[in-house]
Length: 247
Image 1 (cartoon, one colour):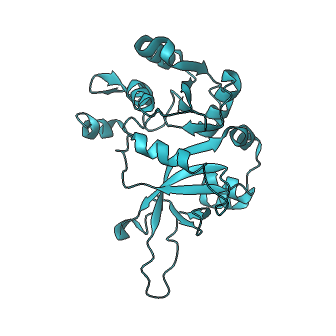
Image 2 (cartoon, one colour):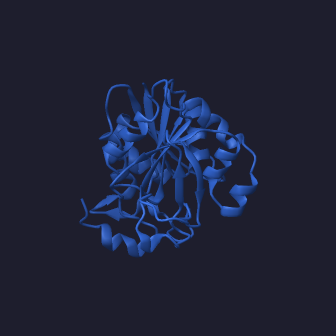
């Protein structure tokens, strides 16, 4: 299977302006993220691309990596990272089967997580074919009521049944069933990625404010791989203090 990694990185952020350029251990965050992406190489690897809306991000990447990494400029008004990946893929013209969406503020992802996503696309006759792959991690009981911890439930073939900000499933009877939280790292079949920005908004998506519910409501098949690792979150300037020195 052939695959490429696209890193959407926009310059604007309400909580953290110019976040991709913030320094982590002396290097811009986007450079650290590209370094992690370049470690995710196995058979079928096509390349790494940064999809941005700002020339400063472009310059930071090119000055560090040169021709080893592609950079494409995408419209600043694109609504999310998925749309930016789709726009970049159209410009790149990569002929690969799967695209991994690695967010520009995820400098500490592990290659094993990316490979777990890719493995979701190579099933057998007893599995449901995968359009989109993403990750889940076991949820601690303390996080169950937290609406910022998005919960997910899956079928027996690991396909997503529903995502919610509410606690799901509800344990009416005593059960050893675990609760899982969604981690928003995605991989898509290339032809599916190009379709996603054309899908109309859906009622469940609007109710929960979760983009992945739009995909489910339109009938796409999302497979979940389980991970035991979660990289540090970098959402505000204050978070930088916790991650400097990490690794």
